[in-house]
Picture 1: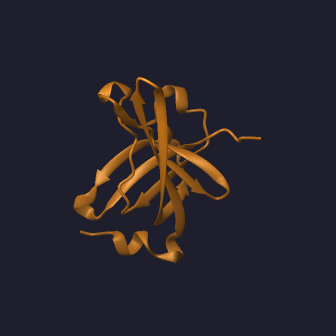
Picture 2: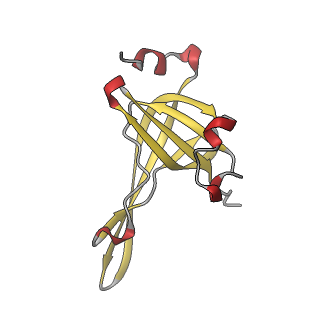
Length: 123
């Protein structure tokens, strides 16, 4: 069963968003970062109370969204993984930036489900 038709249905909330992925590289001179962006499509909805219980305790008080997309979102790689590591994806949507905190790979059904919390405003 592939649900991508539902994910891309505008009547079900399909919308465009931007995914920012930041890669950090360590060297003797310090740490540098490189940011790449990609456009993606999918359904974005407010998180439900049931979903909230699945978030880590320190993130439960945050505003969050659920994303359903065919784009392979990421929670990043650990800093201890070598000379380079990747920060959690940042979703730019609805005039706000959201940090991906959980990803469920449902590729056998044609999609990924991710939860993202609101990043503080840079005012």
